Length: 378
Image 1 (cartoon, rainbow, N blue to C red):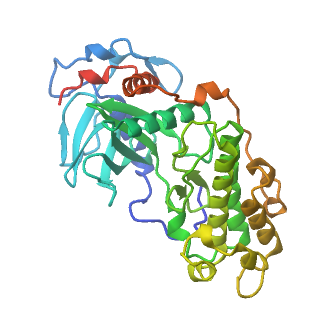
Image 2: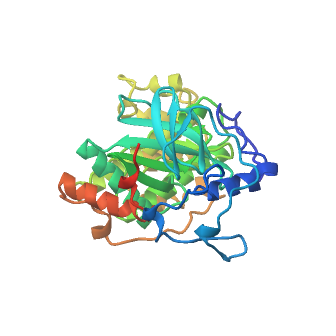
């Protein structure tokens, strides 16, 4: 892994992954869930007989019947209860998780447990030797199921380097589990840092690049805040999802402008401290700020850089698209990544019933897991 130049100290829980000396042992352990060294009768579950075969590093196929137990395997956490040959039941601070054995749970993320409807934990991917975030979401609420289905299908159809990718997903007992990379923090964690214009421009450019791709495909985000954008110590960022906006084509231009206004509020928050920004607001809300005073670039506003003021003005004005703004002089050091477009009919959930949404979601989950998760018995 390349050495990164940190903008701030790494957050708790983001220590370096497992040392390279044990990487091969962990990889073998993660690939060998079927053989129990103490049980000569252990076998592959019937539901996995026809799942895709694995391949070795040299490209040759590895037969499941030939999997052998490694001579030594990493010690597992004492709070783990083996519930099935491929999964472990893990308890973290009272929250139960059912995790594939390739993931070693670390800790529950504070503040994420909400009455059994949502929880998240950090974990180590033993196969890839990297940290990940595993979230579990209850699908009992139809609105939640619809939003998660929308996010998963957009993640497949419209992948973007600045939107968090779901690498694994599965459902157990009406609970959806998703696995994504672990970022070092959120924008809210570094908002008080006095960052240079280069770093602010890099952050803003990445947000605009992701939003431009969504707008070009007829999708509004609707939830751009300091807390919904993750960032690494090298200022690489990811939007946490594809947003919460509905699929309606009505008032799309207005919703696009709301996205740009939210980005403008984020930019101004990085360029001015909170007191500087909200002294021009009656209700301490970015939609109530007297932006005309800010954009004058006086010493009162603290916003003196011409290109920064110009970009902020165009974000707030809403006459240009996100794609046009990517060519602003403030971003002269950066180039937006290429992205694809798909027909709108493929990205719209539409007026499906709750049962239809769940059926479509389970079809999407089969792209991640070729086995039948309903056969897991706790």
